Image (cartoon, rainbow, N blue to C red; front, side, top):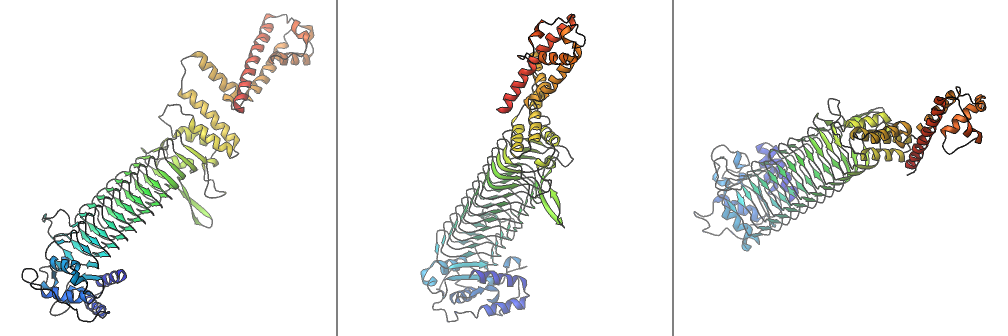
Length: 612
């Protein structure tokens, strides 16, 4: 039944009128040609049942599609199938009363007379509002390519099988009609099979708390008003692809067993899907969203794909949980993005997309953050795509944890070549991994100077002392065997401290300067060896001016200078009684002992720090 409806709709849309008639005539040769066992009851509504309704019942009763374009006295009327597209007055044989549909759908006597458990009607216009509130309908019901100018209500109705309105129009032809708030009102509707709303035209739609056992398909439709689907439950797929126009959409608290697909749709209003639960993925590729999109607290079992889309408002997904990847790459355009407190089991991919405002991924977790992606061009050559950051863009990764950071320093520059502002405080990652072997495509491939410039550049304007980003990068580089780079980063950390925390106390400033120049903040303790060597050489030269007989040989001058520079070390007892004959020489060697003791103290401290 589902396949037949779709194929018939496609045929009636694409073929010329003579072919339509031939197609419908072939359709009527389907099984079920026996005469209908019962007629419509008289008197029926005021004025009785029309000839068109009698003809429609005869077709439906036999298990056929009742195409009202064939109900006239001359057969096919050669007018557009959907009465909303007919200029002028709609022929009377096209018009069905709501009472007629209610009778054949809900009264057991007529339902049991159906050759098949289905009521399929096409090209009809309803003469009044279709009110099927609180009813139970056992056959499948399809009212396709039809017009309901006064809308339809299905509040708490129960349909055991499929419900279809493919290509139909809900609401008046005149925009001045305001008798009904909703063109399609179905709060609490229950559909055991699939709900087809594809290719249709709606004003306001209200399917709050509706339950659809199968899938809900609204692809290719136009929604001129609100689309309210709060706490909607769909067992299969929610298909909203290529919708020509959405105004405000509310899917808050909805549950979808399979996927939500809205690829290629146009959201002129806001899209709100807070606390949405999706067993599969969410497709938002090729979407144009003029206002905010909110997925606050949404739970997605599969991936979220927003490639090649334009989001002119904010993209808000605080507390989002994604079972696979979150694709925000591939030429999409974003303003403000907030995905804080999110959990992404796969990767967050941003390569090649444009970000014009703040991007907040703080207090979140992901397996991987991909800020650039190599793409093969030809013959083994690659080009890479970085995010396109605006001059005012800011990236917040505070307290976020990932396994892999896939980026390079150019991934952190704005479109004018300057550094973006990034908060990496508390940001942790286990490794800097590349996607291509042998291609310089990770931060670990950058020089030590380049990495330091990166850490400093993304913090321009932030004078706070924050050692964690330096420690994190140094740890990862060290574990990757890049010890020299790790040392350079740790040295830069202490330099960052000195520049961020100017001390008002002379002794503190002196200690920091000494630590920097003497042992390289403990990162380069061999600096002290250079100072020792320099101190011994100076002492040897000073000893040349000593008048002591014991120091006349040059080699003894050297050993004396070395002994003086090394505390707690004595090469000869005779050195204690040496008289240099000059108070200047004597003063220097006392000073040399003090300097040597200080160098030894710094060296021991530096080695202890390295060991820890």
